[in-house]
Length: 288
Image (tube, rainbow, N blue to C red):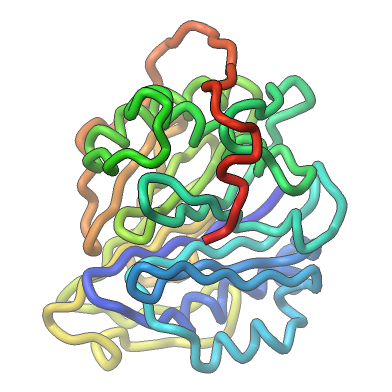
């Protein structure tokens, strides 16, 4: 399956150290050779980079490891295809417009052939189960939180958390559903099988990458008021306290802090039928 990396920070940061280790899993220390992608925000604008080449052997990925963009939020993915051809359209993260913001989504896992089709407001552009699940998630959030209106004012993060936990639990009934979802403000992370996170703040430790021979004293690269959270499928470093997600757990990160209000989304929920909201099927397929 695939590998996930997410970063949520109090102040805009660059992430070359995390990328340098993580991207090695795309064809060097891991067999995730079927493409890679990165999403980030500058102000309110979201940007994505996608390639079908293995990340560990990509010149573009190498340049990003040298000097990448600054952002409050990053969503990064290296792919090992289980459903869908090896094309840029099928590379994560995927993007959609909702409640006046661009949302990015990346998934690790296989949701199987019984995953419902996306027949609501949002429709997949590619052929992966991951993008279909993203569309189903957003359709569910719109239905549950704003009565089917994707142009309404954005709900608060705590309301999104509760609704998202319910949608994630339902979709996880179809298979493995580890994912990262962000609107550029909050980073929502759901662990189905393997997902870990670590908080970095003063005093910053000296750490060593697991996938690349490099040690870094994080105190040299951060100020006393810096604060960030790093989420990854498997820990990226030695020398700091990574925490594993409980299976079925959803966490919410904002401004470099864990702001989760409910720490487990493992409620037993009834099966639901994903249905159209009545809006045109291609109404919000656009990228923003």
